[in-house]
Amino acid sequence: MNYFWIQLVLIVGAVILAFMFIRRWDAANTRAWKRIAFSVFVIANIYAILRPSDVTWVAHKLGVGRGTDLVLYVMVLAMGFLTLNTFLRFRSLEKKLTDLARTVAINEGARLNGERFDLDLPVSAPVKSNGA
Amino acid sequence: MNLPPFDIQMAAHERGRHPEHGAPVSQNDDVWLVIPAYNEGQVIADVVEGARKTFPNIVVVDDGSADDSAKHIMTTGAHLVRHPVNLGQGAALQTGLAYALAQPGAQYFATFDADGQHQTADVEKMVSLLRAGEADVVLGSRFIEQNGQVPWIKRVVLRTAATVSPTARKLKLTDSHNGLRVLNREAASRIRITMNGMAHASEIVSFLAGADLRVAELPVDILYTDYSRAKGQSLINGVNIIFDISLRERGRR
Image 1 (tube, chains in turn red, green):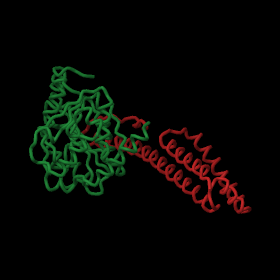
Image 2: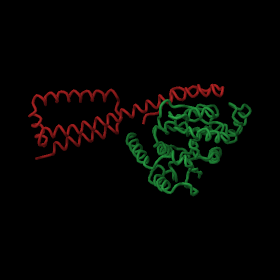
Image 3: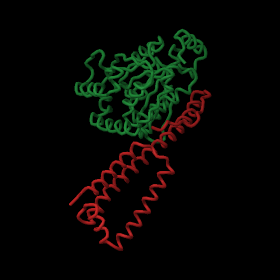
Image 4: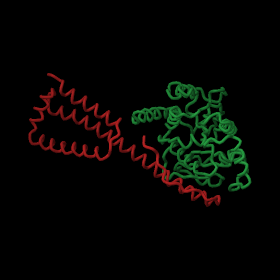
């Protein structure tokens, strides 16, 4: 059996994963692609339920023995995307939380210490860390 | 930004006539100590009052402590800034720097540990190096002069960290993870610590390597008390630091 096509699909998937990690995406663009991917997923799902043997046919074309195996491979890739997506989302949330907490802390601190020491301390504008 | 030392002395003297919030008049009026504190209620008040004998301006960042750290800090003459949630030491340092930068007359900024392992005498030495205009940033090092205080296992790990880190090598640093640092105003306002956790030490070093700032190292004494030993980072946390840093390096490109 010739494994070329499935190997190509999996390697391309892995490379895209790596790129996702390195590049910064603009939000609207990414969201659109995620929606497209989701729609494709739903359609493929329904099709695979209606004609399960076709999945095996596609698997054979790609050089995979059974349709189930193909589904498994695709799932591993999907898992990877999901994990990465969650990680990036968490990181950006953490950044926002930090900026928010810092602004609150500094302004609250200026008020508190101003009262404690009877000083007129500057209340700062929102602090923003430049995104890495 | 870089006033000649003479002017700074003059300015400090002038302010001395209007002592701010009852602090003892001192020639270190233009120095701000930034102390990040997380659950340090036991010792923080003593450490702060000890340091305030030399440095009247101190801001303690209570990083969302679960204990009564804030209450203890309130009894001292230090400014208190409280993170509403725990964010990590790196975030606390950045917050403290931002707060200190906004204070009138602040020229020099020192990061200082809350557990009492650092000596104000060392900070004075480091500040005087900055006042002389010989550097923009002075980092404390445990290894320039061997004082036998550092536990040997820690010595091996920290020396290895300093040797394998490309940025630390570029700056010819002997100790890349020392919490004692003094920055002048330019360096302090340019630094952006984005690593909230413990990886900020490496982040600061790599920032310094990439910036056109003059970095110097000065030997400092570290008091490894039982308290600081118990509070200090365990070596296994080094794994976390390596992970954080490698993720960041990748995320940056």
